[in-house]
Length: 488
Ligand SMILES: [Zn+2]
Image (cartoon, rainbow, N blue to C red; front, side, top):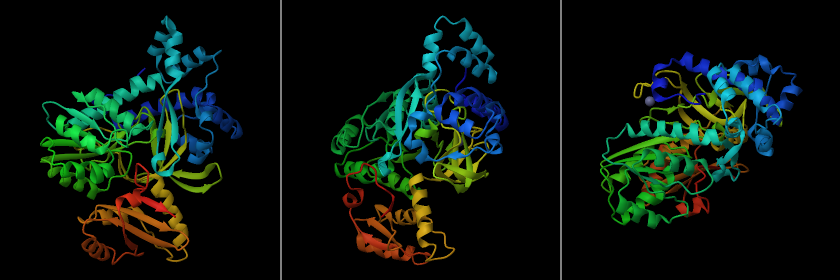
């Protein structure tokens, strides 16, 4: 059974065909897998749902099912794992295959001598991944099966590597991983992607696993031309130290950011800093992922091309608006096209299964058009505000509503404005809830000039932030990732 579409297929299949394939998997997942997930078994009973009537995500809404909140999932992640009844596992699996027209796979399974092994691969959790916790201290755990890890994820990573390497013409590629080492999706996805796609993988890690000093030395000796890490680490630690130590890197280097939002001015800053150590052509790409989307990692194919949903058979991603929530659910909601809050349905088989899940990130623009650069017929997403920023935004709305009626303040835009100033090296937006005050903390080598420019930049802002000069150590604290937007 195919668990992913190849780049050639994503180029030649129409949007309608890809959606039909997604819906087939959705239908089979709802009919035979969700009833084996304790949480959904109870949910379907409570809402009196006939699971065979769920053919498309629209039916989820039509039949009155709610969206599940992140907090509800985090309280009991074990209840979201496919737990097949061993007695009927074989029959159920056959029905599940037939329900999605996978007759060949069903026939092959019937004739297979290693039935048990195949089913184990499909259902037994093999890998635990987390995402999101570096900022909030509340990482989201998700289980992948052997099939998902070795077959699907690796194939998706190979495709992402091909897309990213399409932007450069290297004779030989050497990859350096500068993500903090942790059981997080970031480091692992990059490590495997480099293993598969680069000629040489240096197998490094940041975040204290190897000191920045040592990493700079390694880079000087090995001349990596693919460097993956969080924008903040690249801009504030690795590249400044590399400049100080006077090392040189190849003329063309591909930088890949992940695990945090990268504003456009940050891309420019990485490129400028790299220029000081001999990189004439820095290609800076961004990548979006969340553990709840499982193998669906969304890369850019070119700077600014939007995040490409290259694994549509893993997870259905849609945008919604929420109208009413209870403690556990969003019980009144609607699909909206083009922008909105992300909701997801995993359709990738065993392990953790999240369906009708409110991811919480906000997408400013979603495009259903063939990409002009890579020709893929995949959904592309622009300008994502991560859950943490969205939460702060919502709280801010609550705080300032009385103060400034009708004004919508976009916190992420405040940070972007600050980062666009060359003298500002780093910026953090802090909302002081009690004082209903917005602060903008900035790091700079030329604080007086930075302050002057910031004052000018925010002169016309609806809500003027209080400008506070600070140091990187102070705003970063002991955390490995800067909290870009904070609520106090
Ligand atoms: Zn593209």
